Amino acid sequence: MSAVTRLPAWQALQQRIDTALNTPIKSLFDDPARCGQYTLKVQNILLDISKQPIDNDTFGLLLQLAAEVDIESRREAMFNGQHINVTEDRAVLHTALRNRSNTPVYVDGEDVMPIIEHELKRMRVFVKAVRSGRWRGYSGKRITDVVNIGIGGSDLGPRMVTQALKPYADDRIRVHFVSNVDGVEIANVLRELNPERVLFVVASKTFTTSETMTNAQTARNWLMASSFDSRAVAKHFVAVSSNVAAVKAFGIKPENTFQMWDWVGGRFSLWSAIGLPIALYLGFKQFEELLQGAHEMDLHFRHEPLNSNAPVWLALTTLWNSTFLGRQSQAILPYDWPLARFSAYLQQAEMESNGKSVDSHGQPVPYGTGSIIWGQLGIDGQHAFYQYLHQGNAVVPADFIGSIESSTPVQGHHEKLMANFFAQTEALMCGIDADHVRTELAAKGLDEARIEQLIPHKVHEGNRPTNSLILDRLDPRTLGALIALYEHKIFVLGSIWDICSFDQWGVELGKTLAKGILPELEEGVLREGHDDSTASLMTYFIEQRRALKARE
Ligand code: F6P
Image (tube, rainbow, N blue to C red; front, side, top):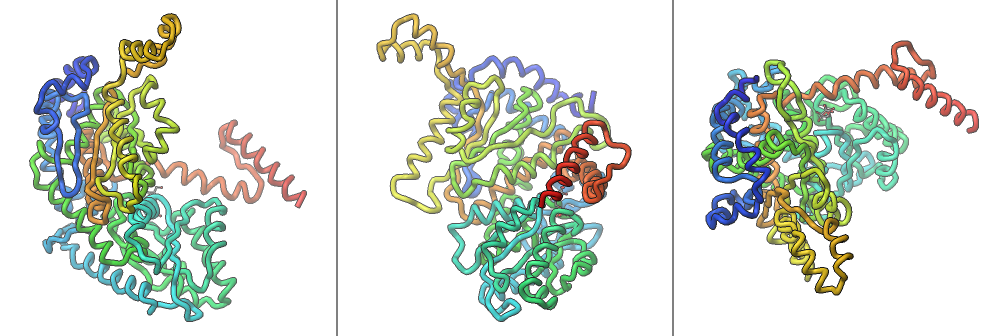
């Protein structure tokens, strides 16, 4: 038995599983206090967890569990720069990047706030130069397009945020993203652009990621083909990285390099210079608003008691559904078009962080950890996969996210959108029983035999858990808070599971194998040691490529 499963609250929670599975969630509302009791308003975000299979006793025990694993001390350890990333022996300080309180944050005895402020100042100056047209391309033309070249945490955050905050952008700068090593993506992006007016941001914490390096090289060749002068690189390329030496070797000058640090995890890095495309697109003031919103959520998370702490609540709903009730996936369903990429963003944030199966001491964990995160815009999902959510034989807890005010109001649209939000969460919880279906079909004049035949197909069991998050509006500050809310949720879950949420060793093996396979594909010669299946697929690929080339 692991240490956490021996805790009194854990043991008591196990005794609550049957009750939770056999109690209709809607019956919990017999308690008239429930709505108020399970709703929190933090900054501009209303969080309602009342539609969860969590009664007062269970919630008390979940909070007790959070206290028994000593979330408060773990939280302080993170904010105070202790090396909570134990396998990489690093601090985890994305919170310092958005610390707007003018207080020091120490890593190994050194206050990191001055270097953060210094880098923010460099970003501010650079953003102003580009947006004002003072920074010009090699032929003297102003920059109109920024292309971010990066992948994973060096792509998903800025890509999601720039889409989410499009209504706050002016038309000075357009922004594009290239992450995939499939040449189709970069070719599609470059086709639309004028090399004299493009700024490439090569974003890579390590500056070794093969996809990013390949795309950066292709972009440089494309620029050279038009400028015929290697000095053009200085006008059209900047880098964001913690590997300054590798950036220099690539040919980007130190004055065009923005720094990040090893205590910033890639998937938590949009608050660093990785957010440069956000600032270039929206202006630095809006970027600072994003930081401010996240900082305010940090303050809430750090100082609010567990029983009124939004990230803790969100984490406990996932813990209960996944680890105790065995629901392995979780859907993220925004009813706010600008959040179209939010679930893709959270997929990396949560799954790379908590997709672990050993605890911080290297022992196998005997319970379910990180959920499978997936989703897309709720309305589109309704016409795609909601059938499964309502009647599939696996229960998928879902977070619904909507806003009071649309960031781009269009007459008659927003109420329709939100009517669906409320309808779906209601339907998922309440369902519709056989009697109801029978009455409905009888009213339509169907005969009894047909009615009985249809009933099992039309019954919705309901009892499907959802959280509702309602934002005042999706502005930069609120988005910052929303992202930080989920970041801290991930931290709380990792703390309770006692896993290291801040490493990602599981991505290494595939990368290493790909490095070895590349020369085999290029030279067309297989080395020994592949399993039979992979060897035969590679042979097929090599032969087909050879045949293709012969035909060209
Ligand atoms: O492959 C996973 C990963 O290491 C992520 O953690 C990271 O966000 C991404 O690759 C990109 O890494 P980098 O910023 O170093 O290019």
